[in-house]
Length: 329
Ligand SMILES: [Zn+2]
Image 1: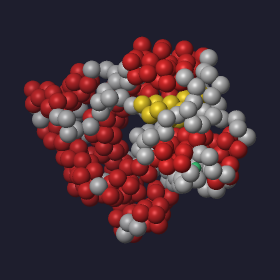
Image 2 (image 1 turned 45 degrees about the horizontal axis):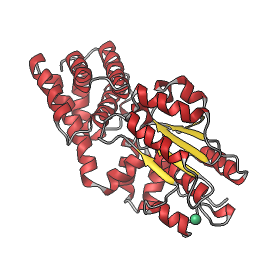
Image 3 (image 1 turned 135 degrees about the horizontal axis):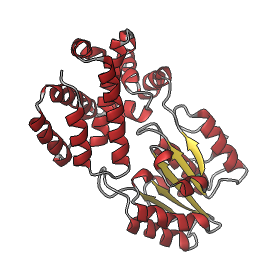
Image 4 (image 1 turned 120 degrees about the horizontal axis):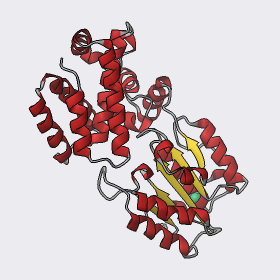
């Protein structure tokens, strides 16, 4: 089959292309991996290949009517679903709409595909509603679920799906792709690849959207600030973070994790592996003022907060809990 336009994840692509060639794509696919690692890109390629009317070894061809309808969002046999609000939950009504969509036979293609993003944010009711569809899917139906971490999903959902786990790419692959496919200058490509954490989608956005890169700088500046704040101010900060529509809390936590990992790297004598080299001064200062065990427990606390949010915990409570437990600089 002709190569798919996605960077890395070769084994996953091979596995899916083989399934498409053999007409053995499972009714339920669960693609998991960190934010911006390539889950949506891969899912849309699978959907495209399943709906495409071009030659089998060229799917998705990108030029047939089915491919054009899919890319313009007008294919009647394809239904994309995601939480209605940024960071919000996936609701039972949305899953019921998927059920109704899949219950009717396809219009233009032999198949019908529902692509459900951020499934880790499905409410319990929504997850249970989907289970019914997963138990007895119509022969023409395909469900593609995306989730950050399959471990937080209902085990009965995971066991009924074929799981594809996407891992972060090697920085060298991200760097090369930025240079060759997105024409990013070499020095910037190397820098973005290092801070991307192997997430191609992040690197592309950081290279092409000025504000995206700025959001990382803002998130890290806020983290340094919180370390100097007293407890009442930290309460206020947690409240402001959850109320500010311009702030993506998940993304902020992701950046905090990278900043804090750098503190740990400096404390353990691995400064050259730190990804935020431009903040070396402040990172070194933090590393000198905080004991190693506190650094480790802070990393765990940030990760636990991320996980709590994935499980639909109350964002303000989760953030208050985290911020109050961050060490002082
Ligand atoms: Zn096509």
